[in-house]
Image 1 (tube, one colour):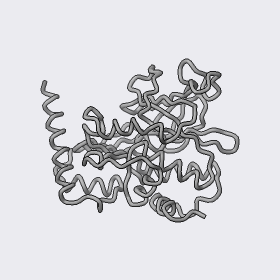
Image 2 (cartoon, one colour):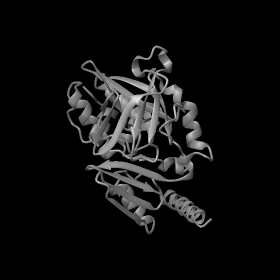
Image 3 (cartoon, helix red, strand yellow):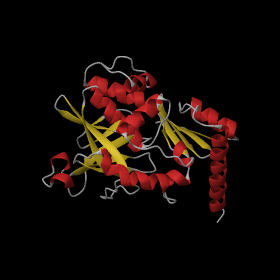
Image 4 (tube, rainbow, N blue to C red):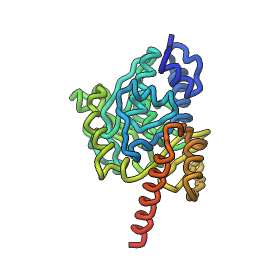
Length: 288
């Protein structure tokens, strides 16, 4: 029986009876997480980045927070294991070039083996697939368009070179259209150095910009600084600029489902000030 922090996690994603491990159960858990838990960097922007210990991440999700891949996939893997699923963690890396074969280590992704088949599972991409994909080469229409192929120079999960084997996940509608990952199993300790860099380095995108992403009823909600964007698979776009902090925190709560009880008045003022500075810098760059 699931108890304690995992009960809170399941309550947050709206599942009261996850049942025994099954393909249907895995799909339901993945969809529920993506619909309710945002990809976000609020605490990093405020200078207090949370650690990536999976138990801590599970507690934070149960308390209404989100996170980025090390938090979200780390917590989801722990939940799945508690429920009896066979989960493997993998070192991955985001790529702006679909031809890149580099695995930079800035992403944690998952595979789950069930009923003799492996599935690619990732709740930490922000704009990734809304449900697991079979871990085999192909193109997949899940509202938006995705693909999987063996990482160039390997033959996928069965690569003869062991740790060198890997996969490329393709996301045609994303600013990062590819994510490469190694087939070899990884541990959370493998991500510690990269988490420190992403959380504290001045050139980290997590420090440079505030953003939130969430799948909701078949659409993609994306908040980048002041700009709130809603995308649907048919190509529709609704874009608006948030006028002030009240609109920002309303969107964080209602559009992205993040609880705000951890943010003091000083936190809210500091976050809005950072967003305004970044927005002004972006506007200035457009005039150069």
